[in-house]
Length: 563
Image (cartoon, rainbow, N blue to C red; front, side):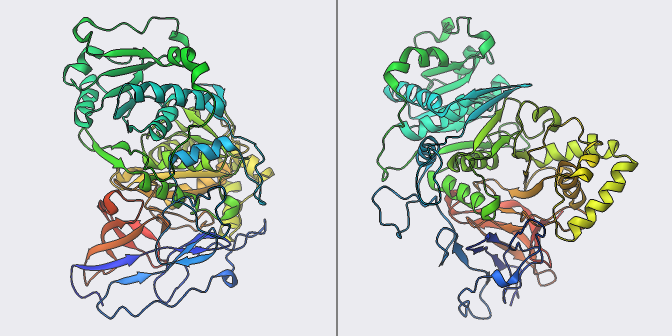
């Protein structure tokens, strides 16, 4: 069937109405061994009796690419011919059994402010909270307060005729408010990593042609940044709480008259009575502006990736439905991101948490390589979003060196449980194991660790199967491991939350999310299951992109990178 170097292997995903996303399979629907079944609290082993019976695949001919699996809409258990592309927003008054709108970021914030909805459809009014973690201190923000800031900043930039805004901030409530302000008030948002050299930031602004800049007060030389950016007309400084007594409204002489400077907290204080606490109204048929992120490259400049609204909501939906129903984010969760929101995976996870009415925590030191122990101080999360580099460094520096004899003995017994398909509980043995490599952490409520790996990242940062197993044992939590790529909102693929299997070498990345479709191109007769990874679908910018990495389909029908 695959008789030429240009043959393609097409992979898709299958949805289970009871369990959520299942691993993809090759015809005739051979289920991967780790496929999740009904969880009864004791055994996470799969129950094949729950496997849905989908329609037979059409005969595509011997020379046609392989199509593996069919897509199923989790919300109402109806089989679809395509992949999940939206949030399924039901507007008031819409017939109960009709499909909802795709939605956008505005619907996410409206759902967060509205509060949790019970199974019978009644609004409980229970809102999540937003915490900003500064060292060992966590500052709480109400959603009404953030809505007020969205309105103030949005009005300010809209009245100034701004079309695009560059945001160069650490993960903070101001960054989140700026993103939603762009969605509600009609300007594009460009998220630029913080702590850049002034020359690099200036180059980013010049490349993006941003009309306005939101940045941390005192973090950059305004004269240098504005020198090559004549299009820049507005600057809003975000002052830290300890420096708000200073005057940040000063404009350098060489840019006076061409730049208008304001301070975030002063604007909010001046206009709070006028802005109101209500979520802005909007036309559901009007498109939401794009959100641009910077994908890191070997050069300092990086690649600008402009995600349209439909890309983002598809990526958010894909991550949401990648988890079985009883493992998804809920109003009882506190989701902490220690990976920067300038990357689409943590950004989409945080948006998914807000849409699910979970509380979220944003860390000012978040990034691709941070100290896991220090970054998790200050809050007690139930879900953590981190990068593979962060978790690999933590394993190498702390977990392996501190593992003693007692910890090794306990690890042996916990391994037997995992091999039997049972997640070790937070019992005595787990507490004994935590005496060793994780004694300094306070993660007793942690239930899920979401780790992402860039397809073009250093192969040394790729987590091994043994490292993922140790994270499950010593942190006492389930782990999902995702592959991300440039131009793909959310993730390309992600492991099943109940996949506890162990292998030698680097871990696989599970099945593709239900928001994308994978194709392996440039495959050969000698190895027809290995090729260049091509991703298409609603979560992909321009509908299709080629990753810089090659991938391989394993015997268990999961995706791994070819090193």
